[in-house]
Amino acid sequence: MKSKILIFSFLFLLLVPQVAGAITALDVMEKMSKEERFNYITGMFDMMSYQYILSGDEKRGKCIIAKGYRDKSMFVRIYATFLRYPDKPAAGLVILLMNKACPK
Image 1 (cartoon, one colour):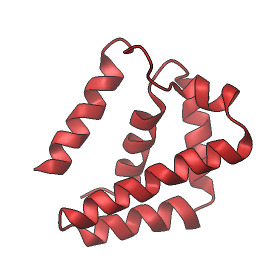
Image 2 (cartoon, one colour):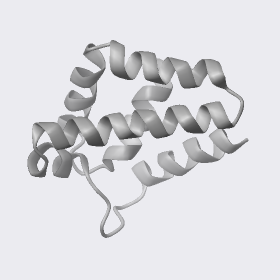
Image 3 (tube, one colour):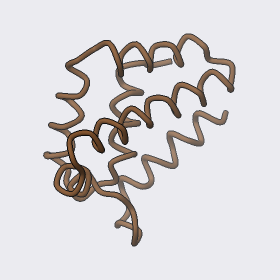
């Protein structure tokens, strides 16, 4: 149930106008150094994995780590998505991509 609420929340963020202070994909790509971008994105991998494991979905939590850290093409896809949707919240885009890579 918690993961459904989380997914709905981020879908909502993607569909409604930006809230002041949200970190957009453009912010990540233009205002962060390469190291900061890496840390920001991998931090989201860690948080997603932790959330899934806490909610009892260990398989999905491990998938997030495997896809995020071991699949080098995941960063290429994330960066391409950031460039395609620069005005959208960066966290929401990463969550959507990772949930697509690691479905239920």
